[in-house]
Image 1: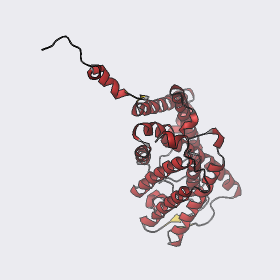
Image 2: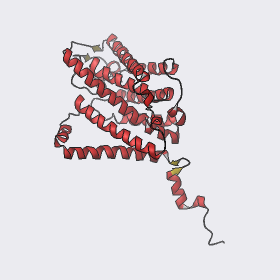
Image 3: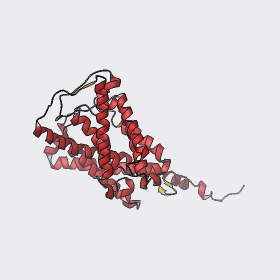
Image 4: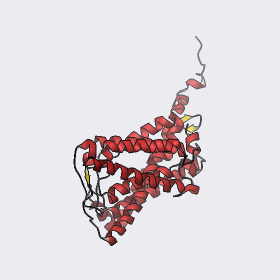
Length: 318
């Protein structure tokens, strides 16, 4: 029996522990994603707490907000605040990983450009067709106007700005750094499925949301991943996301993901079976919403009006 011989390096405890954290490309993707989330959430939450202490009226304003409806002014402030720290966390990690910021789906040269505008048109068209189908089966009545010209213009603008920020923040959170980083470890589509499940899960506690609505949120997440793969960036799906929410909330004045808010254009109503209207979730949970998502996916798959180049994220995340 031989004694005093050290174990091979591959069997040493510290080497096995290192394999848990470090792979061929440095820190493993799962740990990098955890670092990203901790950096984002810690900086956003702690800075919000500090702001609330320094400016008590803001703290009181936040505590006074209802949970079952959207206050567009407060929602815009909150989402803008989170977006700043989302960008900051991504920027910091892009520097530590020595990758261009545009690798995470937001190239500056396409900022709110052709893809975004086309996404807005597609989103408005899809929701208009969705509501027309629900109305054709007797499930939607627009009612009368709820706002005068001045109020309509004001709320149209406020809701539009809010939902652009919502679309930007949600798509960048779930399909930006998180998608690229997780995909580098397990592949693009497994990462897309996991993040779409998480995307649906964060809507779980929203008052009015239901299972068809949550399934639609998951499917929207998968559509977003597909458009990312197909177009190379997030601008197209951000346009769809913003227009989809805006048309629901303002133009057709129906719940979006189970949520309503003040300043809707119409005294509209939904009536009929849940499969048709979506129930408490709103038209997102209608069977026709899934048809619209499939139609958008078919349009994107043709690629005739979008760039078909499989750029930064599509290739590097494979």
